[in-house]
Length: 345
Image 1: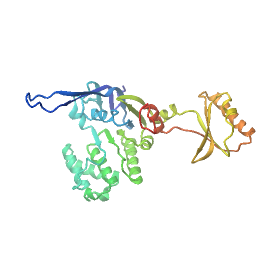
Image 2: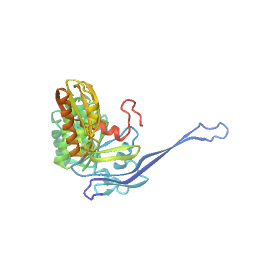
Image 3: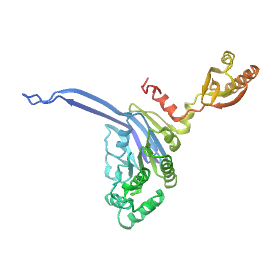
Image 4: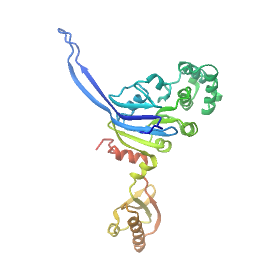
């Protein structure tokens, strides 16, 4: 792991044991264990996050994301391995680590509705030992940065959901922590509020050097927001790459050709370098999907040969596009999830 990392999970492992009991026996007053369950929530996971970087933590419900976040914030102790935040071991320096982390929970659960935004920041700042002139100046700066200056003296209950979520980010930043943990930051927000939140997260990461961890089920948000993506599956780290690299690795060399009609596919599949060819008939119109080999030189020759074959057949070529994978496609492939049934294969 790099010494420059703001957050490090080093071979972190966590197993939970649950016991369920019968009711007490009337005569012996003893309970019998009737069900035991062992859950390997985090299975020897290693990754880091650097200052000025946004890491997206993706996974299905129960994959282990929440346990990892709780490890970073000191709420869950790993069975083995280490969690380091800003150079401090979370297990031995928990109180110091808490001052270096800001947390934004889903559903604006960190704001107090009867108070105003300014009163919320004053309350949480004092709780975390930020006081006096520093607290007042930082509160005004954060409200201005997040776009809530005109609402600073309005009761939170009267604010929109998006404004509450932005206030929650201010509260998480009141101690100026180097690490920010965001749990579903845009869930339930309208397009404008979601856009504002994402813009501010990117701005504070780039300009203020914050280390940001985002957990989300919104693949579009993750793809747009995150520098790197970590995909967790059944407690294990299935992938952790830069977003563009992850998309590139799992992108098949597939091309969509939009035509005036679907031709005979047999001559196309006989072309060297063509792995498969299938008809398309979707919202974008009629055409074919052609999958080619990975080798660039062979792929180029095959694509030219496909176009020439279509020309000889008198087929009109209207458009040709390289079919790019999106993050949802990659996520489903990595976790072996059936898009229709939602079950693992």
